[in-house]
Length: 536
Image 1 (cartoon, rainbow, N blue to C red):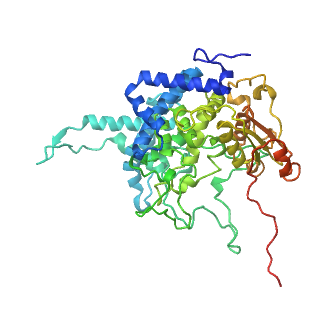
Image 2 (cartoon, helix red, strand yellow):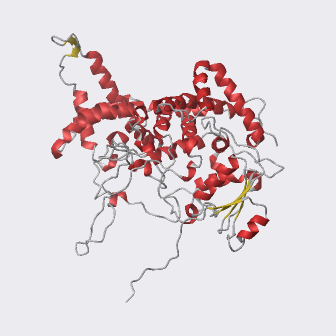
Image 3 (cartoon, rainbow, N blue to C red):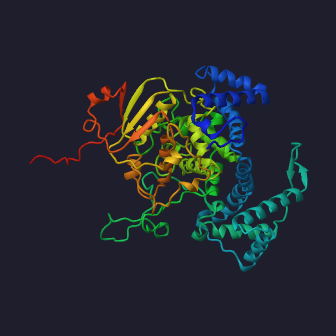
């Protein structure tokens, strides 16, 4: 069955054919050239000479300028403009939260707690705040409080008579008697800043100072056994069966982290991506002796935040996938080198892995989100060195091991036009043929992420992903492995087989006999489990 896309002349089947991907790239380039000729001249110079010397900020600006073009093009291609705009509107609707957090809670309520002071809200204070919440006409109490607080700030600003500061010619606000509503809201917020009943409210969540020797908050419940430790009771998450125990940040929590980020790519200080260096250019080591190299993939983190901050989830994901196309296999619970190297070294860092995963899930929540992610692994104009997958070049590679290293290598090799066979010692369960496709029948496109998403209680172990499948607990959502497996299984230049042990099932001599030009061993760096004992 041929399914049309939102762009005339293209079908879902075309998105799996290298020649049509090249055509789609040409179509995209022509549209950008026509709509923004001045910007296209800059971009064209970059794509023709990506290694030419240019200031880091200039490169970031180019990518941030092109990402919205990619986003709009993909929204048209998959006809998801309305749901994508809904994400943008939802993002803008929460701006009051982050203004209120900084301008009211941090600057007015937080100082009331200096020196360990205790603040209580009176019955009258609570009544005033409840009235303000009711006036906002929303069931979202946190947002209602924030909007009420921002309205008070705006009222103060408009009501304050301006006068010239003596000898400066600069206007300064004349002192005003404090508003009863403002004072009540200040006390109400201060009373709840450390109330665990409100710990889910981002407006009351502020970074703690980092203590490198006590990074994890623990309790020692048995004085006679000081080595016995456990986490705080209020953080307890009970494991019931095999369900996911950590559902990740909400969209609001991730936006809070984005607003906490200072977007330091603008000053070439994005150490989360590039690493933290001293004045001599050497990598800084933190107090625990860990080298702060930043993201091992050099992912465009600050640039991603800039796009997602304004509500462009598709553009943000396209930025991520320049350097990290297999991003479902990273993110929350997998890698945090970026957090360690965050510009905030004396307080809690920005939770970048949570943001990255939220950007991915935002796109997956769109209709055809699975297809949008899949296309970006094969076609991404932001990746000027390989904007679309190449046709088969006649060379074949055997990839041994289908863990993160193996499946990532397989992805890059297929995009370069190599024929790839991936093998793994684990048994790999087959995916439904209709969504994978065959050499003669294209895969059935997946409209909704929920069509392949399974609760971890019932999800069948697929054997794909190596340590990510068998070695990571239910704190991480293994449906992301299913997404990676499906995306790679659809590639016509790639075949994957389980239950095959290299050196046993396939001796290396047989690899050459089967027509492979190269063998890539990506089976991990394990060593025998031999306990080292001193000789007596």
